[in-house]
Length: 325
Image (cartoon, rainbow, N blue to C red; front, side, top):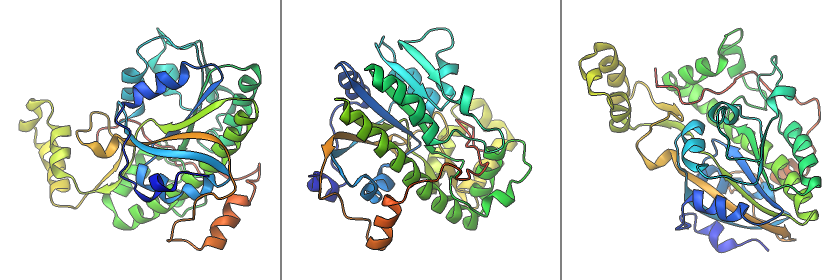
């Protein structure tokens, strides 16, 4: 059975750094670490029911970075006898000259769809399975719940034809309350989508005798009003204090005209560092109750439904570590 106490008390914290947990987990043979991209701890808890059928415990831990680049640089500082299967190309960029891993497998090199603007979670599973069968220690890094969004959304019409759809969608969300509401809804659907596929990968790994854990590289801001933290982000270089453009931009956040959406590098505040750490042990019969925000019947139907192979992924590619405009 799952640990209900930890689910009912969402402020339970693992007083060990995420980095220590990762290295301890991967020190054992046949270990799998699943990494969700930009996964909020609170929304993960609300959608735990997607993992029904697994036996697990959930903790809150603190990431090493507020964006993927920072997280990779600060987390993986020592060699690991581990294969890193990733849909996020930041892994290959950061470790271009030196790699702590046994091998890095960039799924986007083969399965990136320019028209869709993402790597599907099912394709990540397809590549990861080959290394699970070999018995490799493994990190599997999905692109979701990070945008682009899997489910259809009217946001796609707002960025149709944009060269950098991710920058455009984040820019719109920072400006408009209506866009932020839709962004939030689509983000939650993207989270459920990736959890369904992560659940399938975890089940395959457990059958092969693996120890399985799940975490995220960083969290995501979805319209927070944090003018002081935006000030610290903008003016970490004091020379910008005299720059009228930066001052004008900050005033938009200070007055609430704009809100923070995304995960800028260098963020000063725990919001982007709080992520889940999930230890998965095996199957169970009880599971976790769906969030009270949704119908229980509808939630179970969503979990049990298989994702069609032709599912459309909308081109809203997410921006990484971009200074707020």
